[in-house]
Length: 202
View 1 (spheres, rainbow, N blue to C red):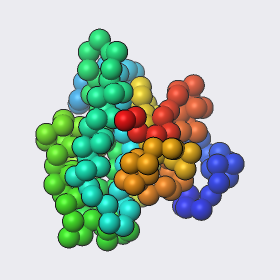
View 2: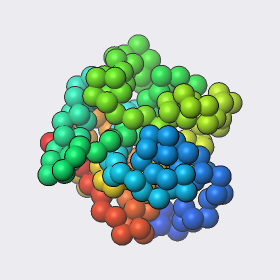
View 3: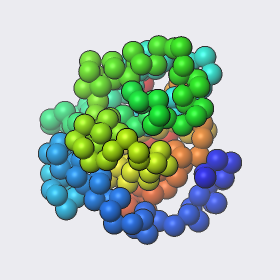
View 4: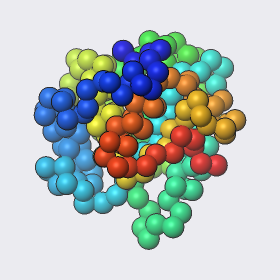
């Protein structure tokens, strides 16, 4: 449980290399099926990732989804070919795979439409949807496992954008619950000499 921990405390959490190898194998299986890595997890094509903590009260999910798509386009500028992008979010088409607070805030909102826009209209990949579609896991998976897989996915991404307390982008903060997971992911990427954006570019 990372809630309430400061960055120093987060840095004391064991590195991803201490996770059971089967968790990285799960991530590699999904990435390989999308032709992003070899079966062993070696990169074939770059991919980006945008992190969205969609648990904020009164959020306009559709507005935030449009901002995410704009951020993706800005992150892709200057690349010879447009990379694939994952959306890492607390939203899920299956409410059973959402944290209780995210499920509560998304109820009776335009969250389902926003998630569909991201995956269908804007072409984002959604990891938990892919593992379900590919039969990598079944419906009995512990939601906590999604956190582990998200960390591994964030570490492997070529580019990564999230929203932290250091972000000065007002719209980014309006769209995100500012928890400690963002800094945890950033620190793990730093341990692999990878840079991260603490604000969605806009």
